[in-house]
Length: 457
Image: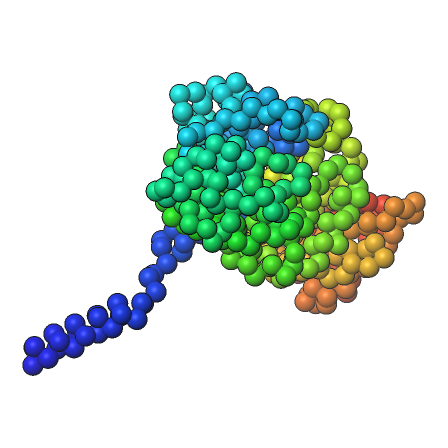
């Protein structure tokens, strides 16, 4: 009897092997969406320093975040584009004679004249350690693909014996606005190994967040899948952000499966037209707002921007205070990742107040079931609910250019509410008023109202 049982068990095991049972998901893959259960919040160097940020500036912004913003949930410090170029210029990429830093495997390295702690092949290890010691997380920006310089030099691909960079590239679909890299041909032997090699390098630097550019427009599904697989095998939690938009809605299922956040639009700067455009694009993305997968409104162009940036002169944001509230209200109720683009140490008290409102950030973190009630004639209403305590949130916006104030009505039954409710203005909690049947507010052009609704006894 025992021999029969043993034989049956042996036959069952052989069948499993013979018919190729799928291996279980790696622990890394299972955990992928858990790394961003709430929308990531942090600082990115692009809006204020373009492709020229230096180590001391990154540290200064990390110091400010640790002191003033960390208690409110801000945690990521992200070095944006072209940290591997020693001679880049602000106000337009230096594409004629860039000095690239790259190792023998065709992997970019930080420019040591800008990041002194990267000397002796240390990469971003020391900078990441500095940021981690403050209780924060470290991120970097890269372009998709493989460096043109690596292809020209036929550098070997780490982990793919005998395969060199010139065997895995294509010059088709090269980025239109930055020519550092070529496309990686996903089905070529060595393609996955190259992405594994750079992600493993970043993991050794203790990178927590990776923003990968030129993925979304056009949508590069194959390279997105390669990057995600590389993250899964690297052994380190690493939030994956795709950039820039507009990500096509037809790719929604794919991008939410492979990335933690994805851009809905191209770069957002400090003009009302850029802010207004977000309301139109956002309409198709509400159903995809979920833990671990966040449609991204782009960076927040507030505070002091363009110190050495790409759009205009060094300035405080051109958005009016009312427009700044409207931007923050949209980003927060929509649950977009919040990546501040201004130079943090240059913040004035008003800008700091926009980043440290506990009520607004609670809504951003805990709001659920986000939906748009209407978007018509320049009037917009968006709502969500806090399942933990039952609070209902409502944001209303007047997108019109004016000159007149506009009355906006929102029936309570559109929010699933009946009876009397107390409305609290989240930016000024002393501003409270009772509502029954509907909320009616007159708003100035480009202005908004964000309230929390609680049942009144």
